[in-house]
Amino acid sequence: MVETNSKKLFEKALNLIPGGVNSPVRACKSVNKDPLFIQRGSGPRIFDVDGNAYIDYVGSWGPLILGHADYTVISSIIDAIRRGTSFGAPCDLEIELAELMISFVPSLEMVRMVSSGTEAAMSAVRLARGYTGRDIIIKFDGCYHGHSDVLLVGAGSGVATLNIPGSPGIPADVTKNTISIPYNDIEKFNEVMAEYGDRTACVIVEPVAGNMGCVLPVPGFLEALRSKTSEYGSVLIFDEVMTGFRVHKNSAQGYFNIEPDLSCFGKVIGGGMPVGAFGGKREIMECLAPKGNVYQAGTLSGNPVAMAAGIATLKQLKEPSFYEKLSSKTKMLVSGIKNAGDETGINICASHIGGMFGIFFTDIEVHNYEDAKTSDLELFSKYYSKMLSRGIYLAPSQFEAGFVSSAHTEADINATINSALTVFKTIKN
Ligand SMILES: *Cc1c(COP(=O)(O)O)cnc(C)c1O
Image 1 (cartoon, protein in one colour):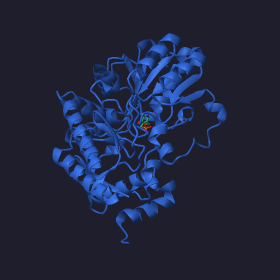
Image 2: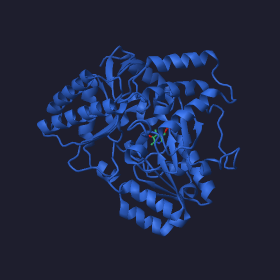
Image 3: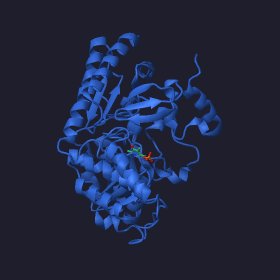
Image 4: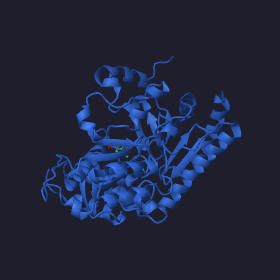
């Protein structure tokens, strides 16, 4: 084995950073690989410290809808940064990003900026509890809403990948009001609401689940969440940290035409900088301090450099047919890979929406986390490794979504499909 630069850096990192990474999924443990250290990105490609190029379908786990180092985004960041990195006082860019978000997403009347998706979801839940004066939270197995204590129950993403039930360090007392039930199970949801609805502060859901792979809501599921929460006076929270501006210009709520009471954002709205936001009905949002007394704060919230990156990103999403082009490229990729599976006798359940997709190695239709777990993880692991060695960079887990950016070309997509076909031929049993 040659000692690559990535390998050398990883060995050094292992001594200094737990597991060598600053976020668990990056470690590539479930696919038995060591992570690559990335030197730079450009459009649809990333380049590792050994000079290898990859077509990237991770996109920093969702934010980079315009691809890497988009010229306008980078220029806006540079403009902002020349004026200083942070003031801890209001700046006009916060208003501009809030206005842009509100102009896209009809359910937003007010927004509050934070610095990560975790913070957005955690704060939205606190706000819902403060607003309703109730304690119970209902969530869905395999959905991930960041790593705050109350939401790390039956979670997706790294928790699913590492196959751990929850996390030590979270007292049972803290999660005793969190109920997690199967995604897409309308009957179960109605049952739980019949029992707990009048004590339920909020129902929080990924309107398209993207942290157990990519799982679309079945017809009627989001509608049931909307009608039952209204009936019981619970707050409906759409966690659109991944789906926001990723699946449709009005986000998943626009695509499915359901208005939640509160929504969480992150990823795309930061253009690759650390940004999160939550927003929704004025009546609820005005319960936040300093207008109301539900406390929430952040030293770097609304940071001008991060706001500039978000503004430069969202403005480009206004371009007519942006999402049509993105969706058709994603569809082309997913149907190409599915066809390659059919041709080689490999069972695939594929899904896609906007610039987001998922490929499960299973012969059943995947509607929830239990279904997702029927996937052949060994086959996935082989597929992952062989695609990587052919220059295709995928999320190193069966339980993560993939992302296409506007920078990916049809040639990139075709090259990826051809690689998948070649790889399928070699890994079939
Ligand atoms: C990524 C993600 C989060 C967490 O966001 P961070 O910025 O990683 O804290 C929360 N919810 C969903 C749906 C996500 O995809």
